[in-house]
Length: 151
Image (cartoon, rainbow, N blue to C red; front, side, top):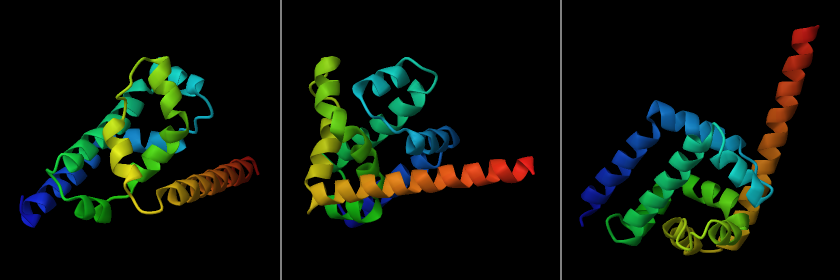
């Protein structure tokens, strides 16, 4: 495949990310802070199930395109980072999710793509730390806004 074709597929994937419901799903996923497999179960049977499934299946699909040679690995990773963020949320629970739901292949494409990255374990730890810091900032901002509104 030519670099132009790879670039075209990456741009098409980007357009899909801009679709309004997908944007809502991605915004929700940013705030999804699982601490156990039960959190995943709760989401899957709740009103945000479609958001969760939309985000993780999108990135697993995109990873499949890369893993199967439809998109150049380096070009894809140079243009994207959200897949690493998504994987960082799911990874601590992935094996348990697979066994709990008897889905041994669940998110295998995403896992394969992400785990090929140099220094990925360190990057995942850093990503989780950054997420925690950003969530704390969001909470502090919301608290400050709520206090300001009552004054």
